[in-house]
Image 1 (cartoon, helix red, strand yellow):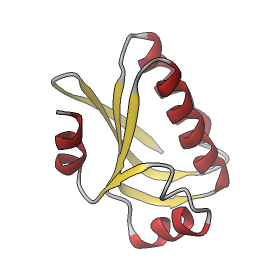
Image 2: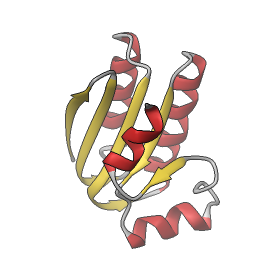
Image 3: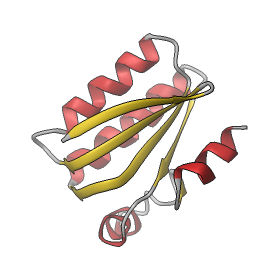
Length: 111
């Protein structure tokens, strides 16, 4: 898994490529924790190039959102493919997260 961080005004966009699974999910968790420690409060998780996600990935996303909320921040998820969206729907986490088809749509909700 590779994570690139881009800034769009006061929003951090994490572009994730690869798999968010038991082997790599801690890398994402650490990245979000570091952003919060640096004072970031608005985060978009761009999953356009994520090919697979397991329950550990879901757990990291839930924990990251909770940590951001504790810090008066928020997180949006964008670009989820059909297979991964099924994981969100089966677990009903699609109702827990603010999810958008594209990063620009998610960015517009932070304005």
